[in-house]
Image 1: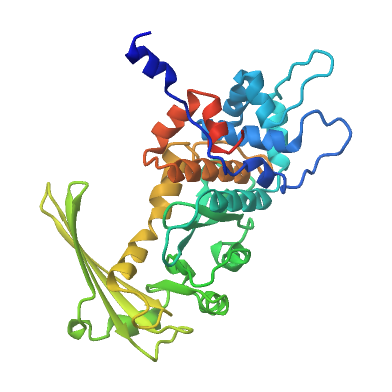
Image 2: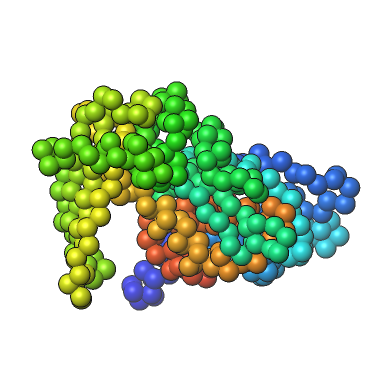
Length: 385
């Protein structure tokens, strides 16, 4: 045999790690609400098959059903489906069965299982953990008689969704903030959020949990905003300077921090000013933006570059999670509305995005296409061996 052919034939495919984390053991914690009578397919197998299909690019229940129907017998066996005792073959579940199962699943329990799996699958990077909190409305779930499903998620700044929670129909993100974080280990972490969550109760809650916050101050807190804005920033030394060029524009970012003991915000130790100057390389238009924040980090606990990275990193939850779900999975165009389906499908998309990012993929659309070309690839990524 020619050496080149022998080398091609000997090239191994994706090989799971010896200590691969198995998603099935985490999905087994999601309660099965079905009555015992008439059950044909295992609950965990149905959830695992749905997760594998979304990891391969399935963006709808119909697409999940088609992926499962096309799966070889060995793949169905690894997913946890049982063979028919008469024929010895595994009959894949119908798309309607998958729809009913996902509509009945507890979305919050599924999100906890997914978060635990992702955390166990890859160790967090060294240093202080930074967690972004932000909400998203699933616009396609809106009907004439009810509001659209809204979710709030917590994601590490390296792209790993830790947990997600559905917001009550006539409520907003603010009351869901503390319940979202209740089950997470926040000791020593830094929480970032937009100005909506600059609330005294949130600051007190985070302090009691032994964590730190970076709270954006805008005119929804007029007194605090005026006090921070009128600090003598011209006399404060520069803590961080960064210059970058991308997306047909040049940007300069400057960060200053000031110790201020009398801020009208619980446990606040420092005030921050971020100045962003952007110049459009095509038109030459120059824009300047000033952002103010407060934090309970004591002076010297973080460098200027760390503070700047956390402030900028917060927006990754928009770019690396919500934007990908909208543009790649076309989430806002999805008309899924039944019971828990919008929440559950969002959780499965979080799982797919998290796994692909942990595996080093920056282009999620390309990762989905690659995974979809081989039924074994999503199983290997999910530790199903």
